[in-house]
Length: 234
Image (tube, rainbow, N blue to C red; front, side, top):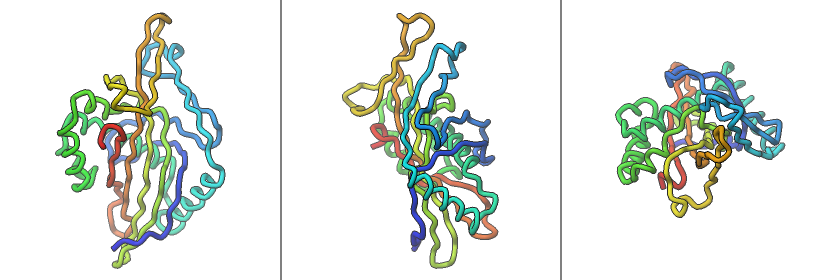
């Protein structure tokens, strides 16, 4: 039985990749300091014509507390642990796994996602209409913002050590989704060149929980233990 030792909340970070996901580095956005975040929408050949601004007000107490606990991970579990690198790797995992789910390639999720979670999302995806499945997939360019939602350190009765980190993502999609089914989501009008020609993209959220065993001798791989796409995979 696992028992929780530390729990903490909300953190922003940025950085390069974790190799097990096999993807090129995703573009970074998240930063904990400023309260205003902006980025050009990079898939447009003229990035200056597209810009989405995300406003955030980080809680200083939570931000500082989270930093302390990430320090504890480095001090007692892995001196090479880097929050920035983990965040970048989590983004890459999110884009890869969300694409595989959208394409119903569940067998390719093995070793990336726990078997229990694969069975859960496969059951839910089989019930989704095509437009909802399309909305699951997120490219690196469409990730507008990411942050940690919760972090926990666990020991089991055999002395095995685990860390789990919940990542939250906000991403844009062109998928045709009816407003009445996604109440509370945001819709952006993105201007492309001519101000009279607009593309509509919707801002969706996703929560992915990552777990790694830090017991000596165990491979240093993260695996996804929970996948949530609110309003899509309910």
